[in-house]
Image (cartoon, rainbow, N blue to C red; front, top):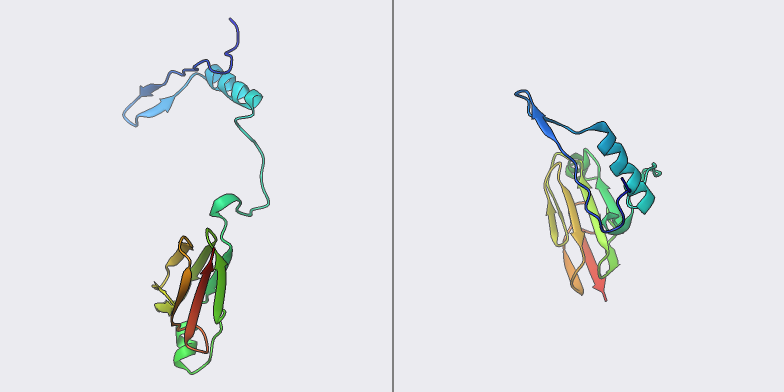
Length: 144
């Protein structure tokens, strides 16, 4: 029997056994399929350094720490975000709110324990109040 060539279809049989419906496949079929995929360069094996890569990696990342709302209530000025963020189209910002209070961050509202992920798809200037910056304002400038 010849090994499958590029473009050939490869099928694997599975069976359902018992009431837990756990699929099983013949071990030799799985090994052959893995060898074919490795040979074609379709599977990579290895560990990265724990960093994200590709389009999912944020360009800007900020964390609102736990207790930030209490510190603001006590009159302590915070500068969690810059006063102005200048970003390019298709860049991404992630803001993680680890606080137990919601925060207004310019054009965004982030509830307690929530994470905001925003990809910039439109040029413009977006400004509003900010509860975690001493100036009380946050401006996002998105350029093309």
